Amino acid sequence: MPPHWLANADPATAWDHQTWSELAARPDKARTLVILPVHGFADHGLGLPLDVEETVGSAVLRSAIAASGLQSQLLVMPPLRFGVAPYPHTHFGVDAETALDALSEIVESIKISGFARVLFFNTSPWNAELVSTAAIDARTEFDLHTYIIGSGGIGLGFHPADPNRVCTQAVAARLHGCTPAPSSQPAEVSDVDFRPGHFSRPFPVKPDPALDPEQLFFKAASALSGLLGEIVAHGSTPISNGTTPLVTLPSIRTERPRELVAMTEGQLAAIPNKSQALVIIPTCAIEQHGHHLPLGTDAMLNKLWLAHALPKLTADAPVFVAPAITYGKSNEHTGFAGTITISARTLRRQLLALAEHLKTLGFRQIAVLNTHGGNSAMVVATLREIQTTLGLRAGMLNGYYRPVQTPQEAAFGFHAGEWETSLMLAGAPECVHMDRAVCEYPARIDSPGALRPEGSVAVFAWKTSDISQSGVMGDAPSATAEKGAQWLEEASAALAQKIESLLRQGVSGK
Image (cartoon, rainbow, N blue to C red; front, side, top):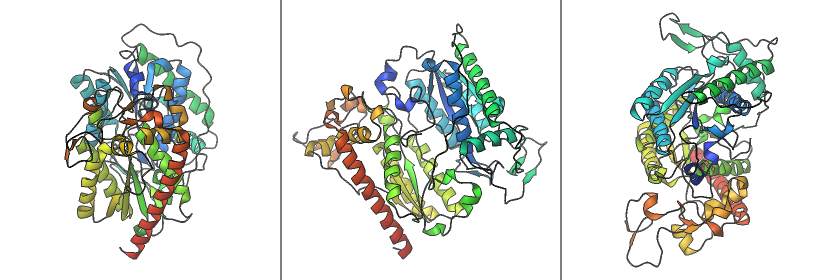
């Protein structure tokens, strides 16, 4: 999977790979099924990395869509990864109110973009009730047609009481390309006959070498493919999906040594000197970026920066990456199809919950890498709160690099302009449509007076439609892949240098 992809999803069906104008012009919105994957982070007694749910869920969903023949009628959102995490074997969770708010705000954004059908594809046993609640709320409050599929229903369940958990383990181990690690902690399960029961530490699953992961995956993907077809046909004339291709178990193993969720619980616990380590929290957005850039630009650029900066660190630098907050506060871009926004309240709670969990794990230094300006104010305010209430060293990774640009572009080229377009041309050229690029500024530096939308002593609050018709704020046509390659290299080197400096200051106690 390329480093800029936000999930293991085919770009043809991935929401974040589309431009806002492509979604706006989509002729079949009323019938298009938008799929929102919901994944948690947990051990589940499987002895595998904490992101095992997403590894299994994304692979089976992508294969099922390919087998269904319904690609033109499906769109897959980036996963929502922050649900509840009620037990010690679960990680990086939020409270139930925040999880419900995030689900509600995302589906409301889908509704505002003109779509009417949403499928929640849930792999998390501890979020099933919240997903059910969100589906009913979306049906009654937003008049959306909502559907739910749980991975347990297709034979790949994660609940400790699921009889197919050993099958899930076999498929997951094959996808991760690793052998399950033996559990070092005793099981702690009680009241299983008293709903909801208590599954503090599930019984470890013993691998069964007689199982055939290929066959298990084929069965699950085929079942999911059939369910997708049934949902698409619900309430309308069934659509032929043609010949179903063979579903095969993909190989998606990737090396992610610094990602906390790519570790097992044992590996996470064994990290030495956590108090001296630095954990990076990416904060991003899914929002319009003109006619020429994809909706996932901010999140993609965040991943590209890290992919270029982290290898520049010394090999033993204690730097780790937390799960990204993919959806951001993007309400200023509402009105442009495809923009997904969460509230400032939800963003704050997610960031605060991440910081609290990192402290529980033993970390004491966090740094936010934010690639969406609309997040900045709430992120800074929350970091102050984290410093004060949690006693963590917390700040933002910004102000370390500025490209050489014209004064006009430097002042008002702050969205989908020369900078972002050049970086995307260098790092994700297949996502850029330069034939659609335009130059549009929200203000001129030589205009009389001081009132401006940004960067002045007097500013006015704005939404994008107030200051741009295309969604672009900057000179996108001036972007080149050559500029992007130079800026990406220089910016990632500056980021690595900043990180190393923070590590030295942390050790010295400054």
